[in-house]
Image 1 (cartoon, rainbow, N blue to C red):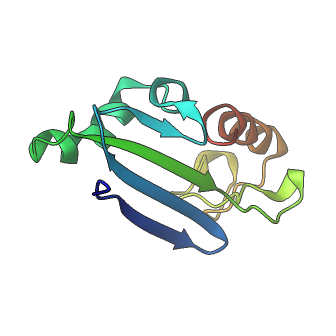
Image 2 (image 1 turned 180 degrees about the horizontal axis):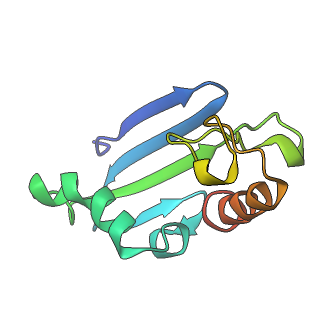
Length: 117
């Protein structure tokens, strides 16, 4: 008999995330990259592992995830420059939109390194 596999999809606007949980030893990969490569800070890794640790399943499942952030957008438009807070209000930014091209380039660089394959 085949082992159970659990699958979920999450969507927001045009982005999609798919997650497969399979019986295993706790390996996690995202977009065919190792967990440590995709999530570069220990804080992120801890936050993601917390539900597995609390349910005592961290070493019982392998997780395979794929993330497509704005997959149909042209290369310079795949990041939405809208923040949850007003970024740099003292510098004249009056909205949540990030309009500074230098800051947009820095955000795009972080997304390239941490999110996109």
